[in-house]
Length: 288
Ligand SMILES: C[S@@+](CC[C@H](N)C(=O)[O-])C[C@H]1O[C@@H](n2cnc3c(N)ncnc32)[C@H](O)[C@@H]1O
Image 1: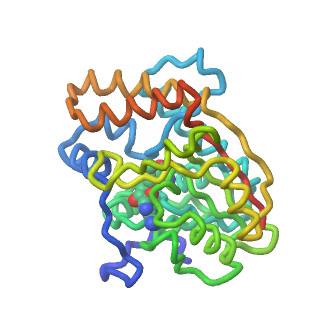
Image 2: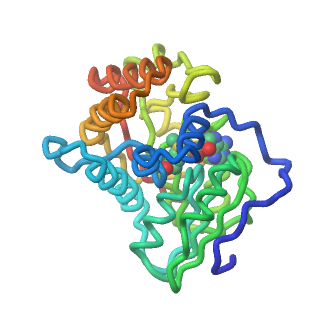
């Protein structure tokens, strides 16, 4: 690992699958058109916010930025991240969680992995290793991790596992690259156990959020953990802490005069399912 931000590889690797995530196409073109409001909301983290007390949400862009930072912190806590660790962030987006760890811990070796080289280009230019830390961004697939066995203390997957082609294969890969007793921590949208058949309806690739599989409930996660030899160290339903995200997104869309029907409908659907408790936002910690 170098102590500079490394460039994503120029040649496409055998691991690369086609990235079909319209919401990232939308964000990247808005950033290059100089849209500062969208860049300040989603230029670092592309995930929901966490408000310790949702009633205190002020829904300003600063409030949302703080809430997205807090969500990263909550996932890091589930993995017991501390100084001197080697951490892999899978599906790292624009590198926001890597940046968060870089700014809050020292003597860290940090690796961000993403399928999408365009996102990695932004991560490489915006996230700079602080003295004492090392950062590398690498192109690759979550289900075929390009790392040796037993290389990381922690593997993170913040709000991205629903895009991966196969959760079980990702768990096997995370287990393989983790050192003994290492932690995998992730956040995900879980269907309420009684509603799983309904959630087996997957979002197709042409939807604004791309292909999403929201069919893994808490029971299925426990089965997956047992099958791949992880033990479940923690599970937290933080749905209520994330709900102000939807009000913020509506406000932002109005301010921006964004009239994308698909985006609005899909976001509204996730909001309704979350408010009905049919889908819950969880943070899970799993130990090797
Ligand atoms: C909702 S974004 C979350 C990004 C980031 N974790 C964050 O919290 O800001 C989902 C991310 O998963 C990445 N992704 C989707 N499928 C992937 C795969 N098979 N392997 C690696 N990354 C993947 C996407 O490119 C995107 O960056």
